[in-house]
Image (cartoon, rainbow, N blue to C red):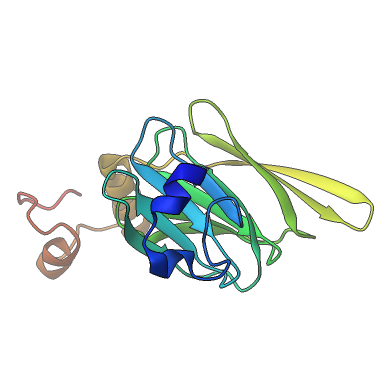
Length: 173
C-alpha cells in the first residue's frame, strides 16, 4: 500500500489526508479497490488500476477507526468513535445499512467466511461487548416477496415503474 500511496494524485496526498500508512487503509483482496480514511471523517474508495478516486463515503460524525470489506467485496463496513457501523455498496458508494446502539467506540469488525454473519466489539470503561448480527442480504426475489407480504397487495403500475424500471411486467406480487 505504501507504493500505491506515493502514486496517488497530489491532491490526495496533501498533508495527512487519506494517505495509506498515515490513516486507516484497507485493500480488497484480489480486487481493484482500496479504502482510505483520514481526519475529515470520510472514506475514499480508490480504483487500484487507474489510481483514481471512485467515490467518497460520508456519514460518520467522529473518527473512523475500522474498515472491513465483506468476503465477496461488494460491501465495505466502517465504524469508529461515533459508535455506528455503516455498510456501503462498493460499486455505487451508497449506504446500505447502519448498526447503532453500541455502548462505546467500536474497536473491531469481523465477517464470517461466508459473509452472512458480522461481529463488532466495542468498549466502554472496563467492559468489552461483542455483538453478532445476521447481515445476509436478501436476493431481489426474496426482497420483493417481503415487500409484497408487508404491503399485502401487488405493486401499483407507478411503483413497479419506479422501483423495478426495466423489469418485465406483470407485477411481482
